[in-house]
Image 1 (cartoon, rainbow, N blue to C red):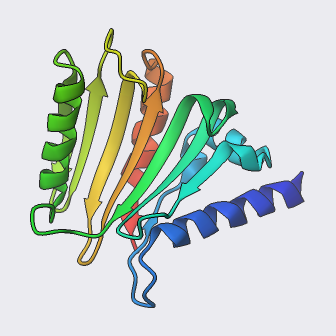
Image 2 (tube, rainbow, N blue to C red):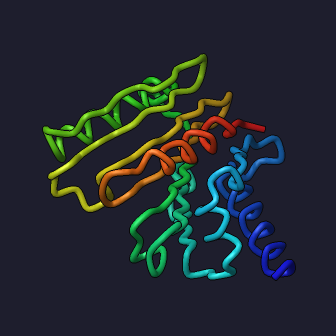
Length: 180
C-alpha cells in the first residue's frame, strides 16, 4: 500500500510538473491534495484510469482526476487542473474568471457564479448550474492563480449539489494552491 501511495504521489508530482510550461524557469501550481480525503483516496488507489492528461495544445494543458466514479471518462466528482499561457486578452485571474462566467452563462442562463475570495493575482469562485444541461457538472469551486508567465486553474466539479463537508475540503485544498 505504501509503494502504491508513493507511485501515485509521484504521478501527481509528474502531473503538476507537466502542467507547468516546459522552460527550466517554468512556474508550476502546487497544492496539498491530502486536505480533501476523497481526493487523497482517489490518488492513493493506484488507478491510473482516474487520471486524464491533455497536452495537445501546449498553451492550454488540462489534467482531470476522477475523485469518484469509474474513471476519468466517467466520473461523478473530479478535479480539473489547467495551465494556460497568457494572451493579449487573457492576462489575469480576473480576465479568466470573466471568460468562465461568460461561457457558463452562454451555456446556462440560470448559472450562478460568485467570487468567494479575491487577492492580488488569485480568485476563488463557486458556480451552481442546477437544472442546466451542462455535461461538465452542476457544482464547481475553483481557484484561478496568475503567475508572471502562466495562468493556472484548479477546479472541483461535482454532478449534483455539493455537501458542506465536500465544499469545506475543496476550499481547504484551493487555499493551499500556489505557484512555485
